[in-house]
Length: 70
Image 1: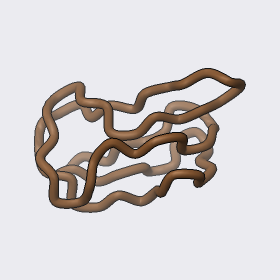
Image 2: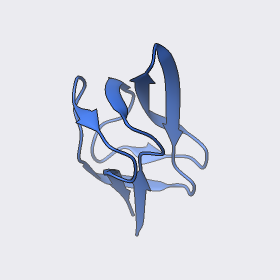
Image 3: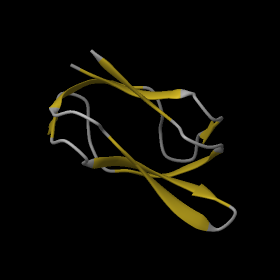
């Protein structure tokens, strides 16, 4: 099981996947917005997104868990 974490604080600008969806290695699943920059958050390994812990508009801190991949 893989936990995808935020690498910096910011607002969730866009969510590009849904729970239950298969994801590929290095696929962007969330785009954060911080200081007017868009920061994509990608999965490290292919799998199935079993839990998405954020929604568009949410604020996350560095190291917050964004999603769980199985």
